[in-house]
Image (cartoon, rainbow, N blue to C red; front, side, top):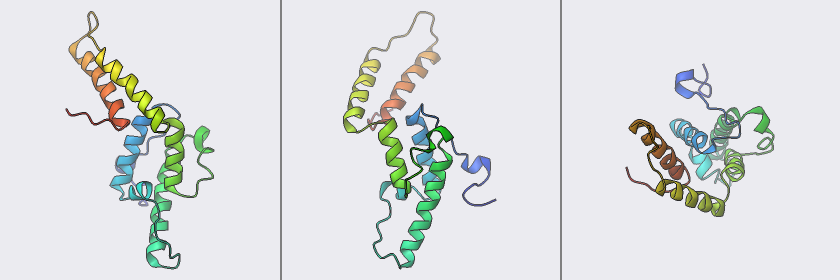
Length: 150
């Protein structure tokens, strides 16, 4: 099997359908990091000499990262990134649309902090269920860049 597709256990690509961007992006980041492709998202292609071997290698890495992102987007959302020419551009397009800019993220974080502060166990709720609700909010906060210690 090719390096890009790999076996299902090695590189299963979660498909983003428009909901749960935070969880999808964390999973995709992990996949891209495991394939040594995350730098194509963070930095992009920085080589300016288009004839150098390092530029060609960077373009190849970028194309591999782009393949993973394209595979990870449902057909209904694919048109949003179809015109992107790099993995970084595709990632930023999805991030802006589904997570928002820094102001939107700050508002969402404020709401999550309020939800966290107001958490209470419900009547008849098991400790495990309460803990799951706590961890869901904490996970969302972390996805928006909040640093929360265990």
